Amino acid sequence: VRTDRNWEDDAKRSASPMDRTVQHGADVLVVDDDPVALKLLAKLLQDEGHRVMLARDGKEALAITLKKRPQVVISDWFMPKLDGIELTRTLRRTSWGKRIYLLLLTGNDREDRLLTAFDAGVDDYVAKPFKPKLLMARLRAGVRMVKLQEQVELDQEIQRKNSVQMTRMNRQLKEAANTDFLTGLPNRRHAMAHMDRAWKHALATGTTLSVLMIDIDKFKSVNDTYGHDVGDVVLKETARVIKGAVRRNDMAARMGGEEFLVIAPGADLDEARMVGERIRMRVESSHIKFGDFDRNVTISVGVATMDPSIGDIDHLIRLADEAVYVSKSSGRNQVSA
Ligand code: GH3
Ligand code: MG
Ligand code: MG
Ligand code: MG
Image (tube, rainbow, N blue to C red):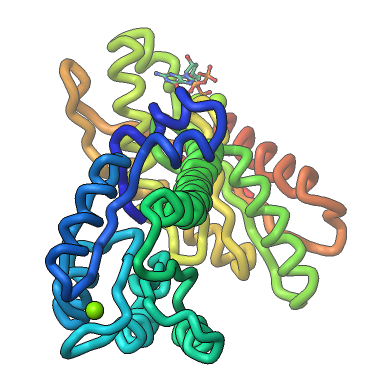
C-alpha cells in the first residue's frame, strides 16, 4: 500500500473519494518507443498533477515497475524487446503488477486484437493517435479505481492493527485483574477461579485436594513499629518465600491483608501438612532486612483436605481458616489441621 502523508488530510478536506482522486494525481509510468509520444504524454500527465515515470521499451518498463511501483501504467503496444501485450502478461504474474491499472495505447482496434489485449490483462485501451482529453478522462476513471482499492486496503490494515492492539490490551487487563499488585501473586479472584477448576477436577478424577491458609503472626505490630512501607516489604518478602516453598502444581495466592492461600491438588492431609511445615520453616528462617527491620517473621498455617463430608469450596476454606485459629491460639508459628 502506498503511504501518502497527506492522505488523511486530503480525505478530511474533500467531500468524496472521487474529489480526492481527481485532486490528488497518481504515480504513472508511461512506456513508448516513440520519444515524441513519450514527451507529449509526460507533459499531459504532469499538467493533470500526476507524477510521471518514463520507459522506452517493455523491458525497461518492467524493471521500473518492480522498483518504483507505479499505480498506473500507460503502455504502447508495439515496442522492441517486450511489446505491450507481453509486458502486460509478465506484470500480471507479479504481485505488484497484479494491482496496477493498465491502459494500452493501440493503433489497431480490430476486435480480435483488442480481445487478445484484454485476455492478457489490460484494464482499458485508447486508440492511437489518441485524443488528449479522452485519454485523460479514461485515466481518471482508472486512478479512481486504484485509489478506492487502496483506501479499502488502508482501512483493513487499520482494522487489523486495532484488533491486534485490542487483543494485547485484553490480555494485559485480564492479567492485571488476576494479580495482586503488591506481591505479584495471584489474587483472591484468581485463586477462587483456580480453586473452582481444581475442585471439579478432583471430583471428576476421584483424586483429592488440600488447601493451606496462611496468616502472618503479629503483623499489625510490624506496621505499628516500623511503618506501613516496611510492612509492605515484609509482605512481599514473605510472599516470595511462600511461592518458592510450594510445589510446581500448587498455587500460592494472596487472599488479602497478610493472608495467603495455597491450593494443593492431589495432596492428602499428610502431604498438605508437610507442605505447610516446609513453608512455615522457610518463612521462619528467612531473615528480612529493610531499614530498621532486621529479623524474621513467623506464620500460622491451617490445613484442610477434601472429603465426602465437605460439601463445597467455601466449606473447605472455612475449615482451613478454623485450623489457622487453632494454630494462633496454641502459640502461633505452627501448622494445624
Ligand atoms: P495475628 O498473629 O493474630 O494474625 O496478629 P496480626 O497482627 O497479624 O493480625 P491482624 O489481623 O490484627 O493484623 C493484620 C494487619 O495487617 C492489619 C493491617 O494493618 C495489616 N495489613 C493488611 N494489609 C496490608 C498491606 O497491604 N500492607 C501493610 N503494610 N499492612 C497490611
Ligand atoms: Mg510503438
Ligand atoms: Mg489476618
Ligand atoms: Mg496475622
